[in-house]
Every structure is written in C-alpha cells, then in structure tokens.
Image (cartoon, rainbow, N blue to C red; front, side, top):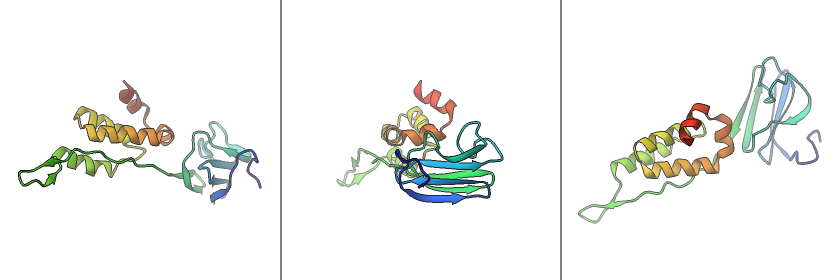
Amino acid sequence: GMLPENGGGVVVAVSASESHTAVVTSDGHLYTWGACHGNGILGHKGVRWQPVPRRVERVYRAVGVAAAKEHTALLMGTSFPPLHLQKESSDDGAQMLSLQDSAAVAISRNVDLFNVIPVALAAQRLNCRPLMGFCEEFVRKNLDGVLAVGNKNDFATFLS
C-alpha cells in the first residue's frame, strides 16, 4: 500500500478533496498528502505540497476524517472517566445528590476536548471536587487530544 510499512497501519477512514487526500489508520493516526491552498490544511506546518502520505504529528485518536478544498476536519475518539460523587442521605434514608453534585453530573455530560480546561478551572474556583477530579482524569485519558486543540492561555492558568 501507499502508507509507510513501518507502522502506517490499516486504513479505516478516507476522504479526498480536489487537491488533497486524508486517511485515518486503525492506530488512530492521520496521514495526508496532496496540495493545499492555505497553511495548515494538510496538518504539516508550512507545507503546501506533500507528494506522498505523511503522518500528521500529535494525532493519536482519530476515528474519522473529512477533506475539502480549504480544510481537513478530524473526528477524534474520546475516553470518558466516571464521575465520583458522595451521596447524602435524607431524613427518610433516600440517597440524594447535593445541588453542586447534580450540577457536576450535568456539566460532566458536556465536557469535551475543547472545553475541559475551562470547565476544570471553573470547578476549581467553585471548589467542586467531583467535577475537578472528573476533569483531571479526562485530561489524563485524553491528553493528546486536549493538547492538540486546547487554548494556550487556559493551559497556563490550569498549570499554575
């Protein structure tokens, strides 16, 4: 095949535009080649012509791809950790969640690669330990994706 024999992998998704092609392998890597009209479309910094398939750096969890004249869109797989909550007992012995924990459950259902750091920062400001733990574990499980799409200013605040 066209992919490098030293780890190219089996192609599981492919998309082609009029000028470039992108494939995703079973290992979650993205390979692109062809020409592009703008910077970054192939995923290789400063490259506008790539004659043979080349792996795009920092992509490890790709599951799908769509190529068009002015973009390459990537669908990345995500691992979601459990949200650990402390249930409180009411007077009648029923298990209930606090208002903060109920909010943490709702918010955790909407966490993704793009917003996990801002959500973690908000959870930290509000001292919502279950949501902070969820976000920290989400980042651990999806670090490659979070680093690939995250905002540098959010990282600086999160890490300080």
